[in-house]
Image 1: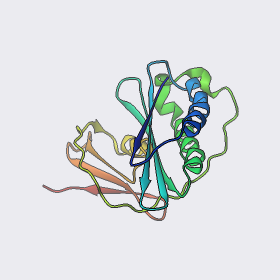
Image 2 (image 1 turned 135 degrees about the vertical axis):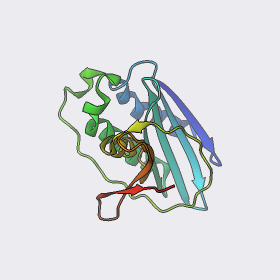
Image 3 (image 1 turned 90 degrees about the vertical axis):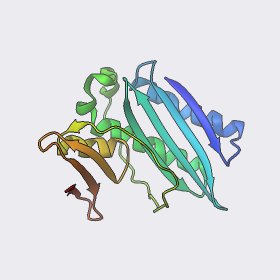
Length: 176
């Protein structure tokens, strides 16, 4: 697995890079050699630091985690367990896209990271894919977003699934 560390408005020390590299080594058991993990480090305001970890594997598959705290080293311990938890939760969906020998150990406990509400700072373009509502919810969890836009395979219409504050999911059925 390839590792890319990217800094935005933040100067990463060599020690931090070494710690990230050491902690990321265990993810090689989940992914083939052609997978890429991008770790984006950024300073947010005066005393907050953000870390975004994205793993690209098996074509166009993505697993993602984003955390913000007052310490970049804490971010490592928050973001990487989220990625591992997503992989374990969706291992049947991911199937042959990850290494089958990765799950021979007992599952590790999952920690929930606090995710603050941020403003939208960029616009992204993506293509819609036909899928069921259940598949869309799984994709939303894999990319660690609170919503996911998809083309409903049953109705042929654009829908949005979203994570509700009570922990459940909602479905927006658009009329256009």
